[in-house]
Image (cartoon, rainbow, N blue to C red; front, side, top):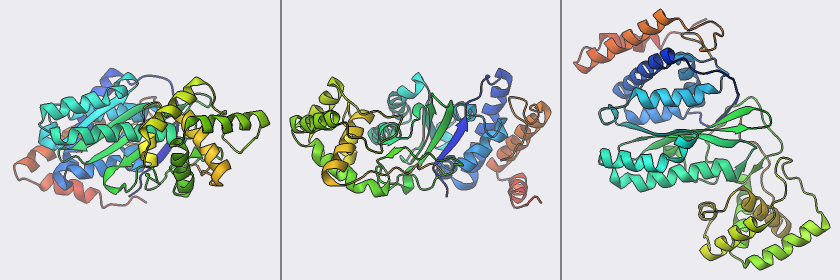
Length: 360
């Protein structure tokens, strides 16, 4: 099981309407095949695997290194199972830009529509916390602009979200799988899949940052006046530490306000500190720095980041999407699924045997 992050360059262009219509149909059928063969939870496991997710995007018609793969593949999955969520036992909320901000409300609507009320609060909290971790506790220079949560009727979940580095114009994708997370703020990603790492990140969710996290929580519970006094000394003496170059030392009223809020909340642990409204990258960066100076507990600087074609690529690379082949793939899957529903599994078994072949 490989879950983690993938780093992708940003490409221009849009997905043609005719291609997206095919993507929706094929994506929906692929989800249905996985559910029929292995059950709804397997859909989450596969989506949380960046290799499988990338292969799915390529199958739908994307270049392997096109960042548009993430947002459009999630949209195709979401629309591909539309009106069949209850039948499949798989639900999807969220998306790109403003849509991602409406994820908690969308989860609530799904809960009301399909009587999943007892899981709504937990899924909403998970959605917010996962986004907060990758946008604030893991400061790698990528700002989230896409968030998608996939969940079952029993409350199991997986998350795919993506951030963009505005300077480099590269994107990074984050995968989460709920069933294997023991601690949201200590190595929450099971594995990392990426061919590029940075050496200037502030990784407060690394296992080795545990002492720094605890010290940060301790400092946050103290009167902010003490913190701000020490902080002013740091700035006056112009102490330079090995902080990420793209994250300057925080300052100003915003920092003071978030510290006072943390003091009033008195968080018991780092996850509690992270979920306090207003506590974002600047506050965590300041607390981490003072924790290192006062307690000798440095934070991790390790970056957590560590194909093939079926139908062609939307940008015409390595060749244009072959419409006839795409339609044939949809037809074969639809026919196999239809027959499997009535107990005729010959075609499904044939597809399963294809998966055992190895190409030389």
